[in-house]
Image 1 (cartoon, rainbow, N blue to C red):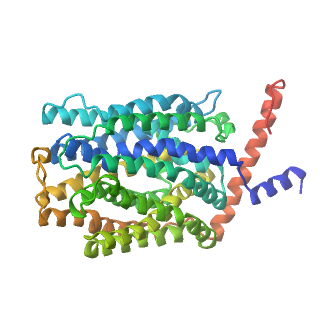
Image 2 (image 1 turned 90 degrees about the vertical axis):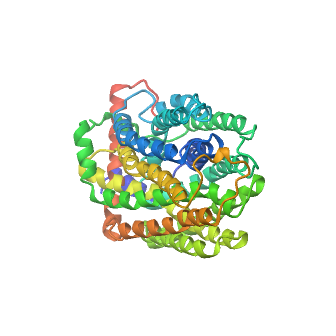
Image 3 (image 1 turned 180 degrees about the vertical axis):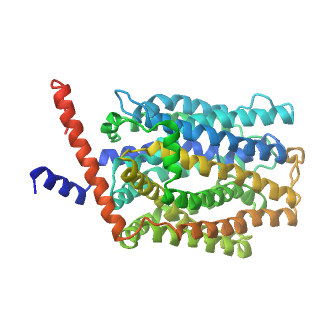
Length: 486
């Protein structure tokens, strides 16, 4: 065995990242999620529907049309990012120079330009969704696939995502709690005067996180020397990846259920358990704190049982919490108990999403010989982002079915009827529980698990180390005066 091969073997068995790179990974996630979870989640639906007075029909229609746009922009942006070649790398330019535009588009979301009519408000909402999501895709496709690029082994990815999760969850909780406090609990539908300044401050914070993090992440620069797959072949090779399609089936239904829950939480707080102001933050805090606390437990279980089994177990916890919540969660304390259970399951699923995405990208590399993180992130978004639109539209449709008023802003001090409360509970608990079961069914067929797959993962790591060595040899020959960092 040669000395080079021995070094590669050692590196395969022990893969570590410097702490600053783990920190940067977490900070980038804060910058990304702090804005996207608000502007593409329950807060924006509640803002336009309840605070701006956009009818549930027009709000739902905007989400459905928006889903069509997602089918176009995400795969296209992902392929473009994988084909990017610059002195900064493939990923860093988008993070560093795209951050200010991402922040500006978030601020514009809360300043609709036509507010005097339903159709004008509808187009304001729709256009803001289009603009924000395009810039979010540019940032989010990179951060979603970043763990797959920075490390290869399942253990290293789980550790990176765990550390990043600890860091990013702090910012994510703050970002989600603030809108909940500022949007709910008022006796009228008037907008809290502190809401918009808070959103501006949050956008500046997010921009700073993205720019700072871009200076410290690890990027595989050797990938820029590889010839990218042609556009249509890139898509067909992705669709031919069977493990990817199975995982995305589960991911679609998890995203659908998750979005319904976090959108429904605003209406659940406002009309069922009637929490407002600071109290409205309690359900979200319980979800994220329980998720945060059990992250270490899920990571240990990953190392013992593997990503697939742990992912399924976490989904089953979500099913249990949703089913139980429908029967007991109309009062404060029982509701908080089932939200804690959901938070534990939610944390396990969220933690393993990125790691499982990395697995299907590794599988693709063994077939194509290319690293295509953002292509896969784009195709993932093509499948899962429509789930966000469907979830919001479905929840609002259920509310109308159970008698929720169309123009809620015209009814001062509205008190939900028993029928409306039942509709909220059906949408908030039972529908997500059923959808989680479908996600479990998909994951039962997921093949990248066990000792045979672990052997193939080792081969992927060897390929990366050899490519890095070849890249350094190339630099030594082509740029002998350039300082080369080992």
